[in-house]
Length: 303
Length: 295
Image: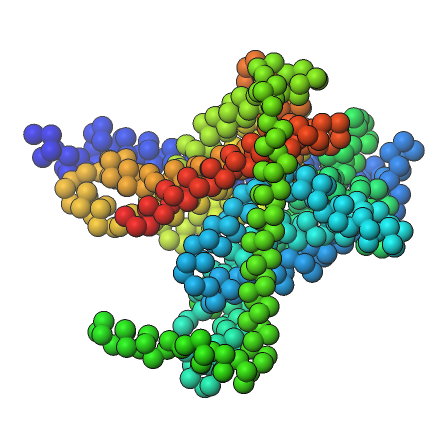
């Protein structure tokens, strides 16, 4: 009786079954809108709390001031902006070549047995907490840099240390995105190049690699986002002096570090200035996100 | 057909001697080959160095007083932090999992292609997954701690983390749902079941392993999170008495130990526990995902 009735419910659109369908669809829709609400809330709270401080300090003064002296009510975050950019650039110098080559190895050079070890290792790297990386940097990388830093009369808690560690931390991001975009390149590219007499290496690097360009760029942009947003590891090893660094052996403070270090005891305009620091970081990240999705769409179109 | 595939492979296979001869003719290729392998060795070597270093330095420091139920400035026990971590994971999952799964179901089962709402949802999810944890921490502090007046609490931290892991839960669930063959749905509709029934009785049960592997991955992220928690859940070292009281998780505990500089040995011990937890979670998640692919 009931089994015969069910399809007719479905068709005629009356009764309890249909109501349930509608209610569930609505519930799923509400769940789906949750991420939109979350992004709107994050934007609202950050901007509402940060922008007044920018107005009070003066947007230009805030962004281009080289002095950060909360005690004297001087708030310039240029050292932190530069610190973030320098450290990220350093991380790219180290992370991008190693990451790209590792991805090529995984996609084109790796025997199956080794792949089963290297691939999980890379995804494990992405899962290791940043405090553990920071602690590793503090206890292993810093002492390694120390003799070199002393030679150049700099600090071992420096831009160089932070760059090395961040380069390591963005590896999994770059490797994973690059590998999947290399795998998306049609096999015929590689085969045609081999048939023309090129070696395996030449075919991979001159035919397959350029074809995956957009995807690889997307991976690098994602890596930039990771590096610029990294907080705990950087605090533990970068020295955190709020001044514009002169050499790679100078300590730096990044935007992220600025927030965590002083938020605990800040109040009034100082606190608002820290939130405004967060707003600047947030805007950086939003720009990077837009770049990332543009590149991703382009690479999807190509393949 | 299979015969030809095998023979083609046989033609492509080169012996080591042939390879060597090739490389001697193309030294550039040899150089590139060496660089590629070297990069992979560096990547895996760095990870191995980190793991071995943590284990060697940390295991001797795993003393019984690190596992005492009460936290004092003297013993710096990590057991309270572990219990707080469990509380935090539960709060975050209770919120993120239903929303994440519901959201994925809407995107896969209900939404029509080219729907503008879907584009916006995808855009915002991508944005969420790109936001660094310190921004989440700042937001959680401003929204939950200050505006809603929760103060430093497990609940505030859990809510913040729930938003943070939402994109991960959504994406893995979506992939799991997409992997369920359409014939299941067609068969169910053909037998007269409604959409809702099809989803709950057929599609979701077959997607469980994929969803589970995503959930376990997000547990790993919660366990390792620090920056989003310092200003939302606070840094109290004792077991949080309830959802409204403050408590530090394991990762926050480790950050504080390492940064104060007085308890480096204890920080090593916490590092071992954190690392083993993350290794286990990653392994289990990978195992479930691997089974899914085979089945």
